[in-house]
Amino acid sequence: MIAITNYKGANMKKHKILFTADSHFGHKNILEFCNRPFQNTHEMNETLIKNWNSVVGPKDEIYHLGDFGMAAPNYIRSILERLNGRKFLIVGNHDKSTLKCSDMFEWVKYLHTLKVQDKRARGGVRKIVLCHYAMRVWDASHYGSYHLYGHTHGNLPENDTLSFDVGVDSWNFTPITYEQVCKKMGKKIS
Image (tube, rainbow, N blue to C red; front, side):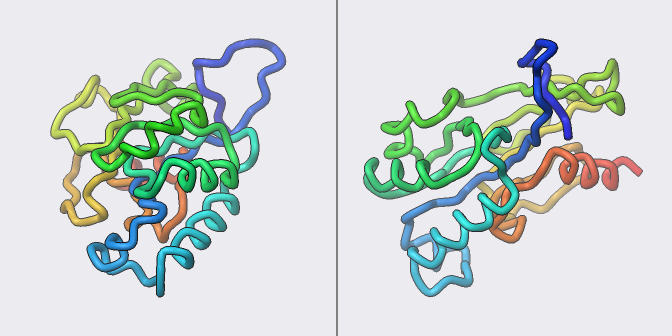
């Protein structure tokens, strides 16, 4: 497990860091738009919640890179209450209702550079630029930093840059860990 640099102190407990995007909780049309294999939004929502909680523990950090849900704010709030982890939101283009539940997140931003303590990275710190949208270049992109995004629902062809889509449509409707990110990026540079 990895601890991030934002939290210091001798009593710091290690936790997992995870990423996901494009859950679209409560969004009926996403079933057809993305050809999701669910009979209805209830089945989709329950599967997403089950998958989330199967990999995210109560103290883990989970970064959702936009388009959390498309439903009434009270419905979004009821979903958030059922999800494990300390939740961070990168705003997507379909987060109007989710923003009305901003108190349910540790923070809400449009762009964030996460710094993860990792002895495998240059200087012992891995930079990860988080945005809902894919970028061609980002902070320190030529120096080994990663870029994670959503929005594309797995439809943007990958290239050899250190970036990829962490959305549920690309990852079997389940958040991915920092270690999975590193493994995938390792294949891109080998």
